[in-house]
Length: 196
Image 1 (cartoon, helix red, strand yellow):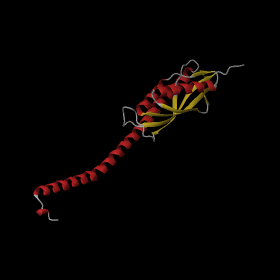
Image 2 (tube, rainbow, N blue to C red):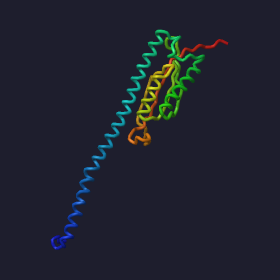
Image 3 (spheres, rainbow, N blue to C red):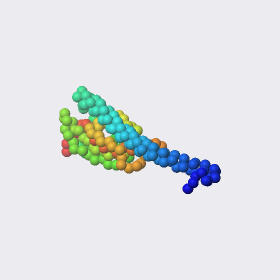
Image 4 (cartoon, rainbow, N blue to C red):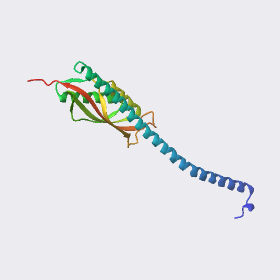
């Protein structure tokens, strides 16, 4: 093919087509790695947000637990920081209800609640529940705030926070990750078994 033998308009059209093809190849060559790098950065940011939420919640709950423990040591029976219950099951039921309400009020989607084994500590029963929920970072922070402000006082004794495997996003914030949360929430109970 002799390019010089073509009319000038056709030469210009061919040159423009080759330039466009070269530009497309350049964009594809540079754009794909850049897009992949941006996606990886977004995933790392979402993981970091999940880790931050987990540690902020644990720190806040630890402070609340220390406060409850100090209050129990000063005057346990008269303090509103503990459940007053007639049985362990009543204390556990109250804790289940309180935890469910705190998470639902924060907007979290509670998936399951199950009681944990009861322990005796300084003459008081330590009751606990394990809750599994789905929430955004903001909902998780709100839930931790509500749990820490609850009366009787609650504390988080264990937490596992990870990015949800689903692709759901919070409405209005399509980039906000949904977290899968598992919390072990405890409380002290003053169980006064009723005599028959």
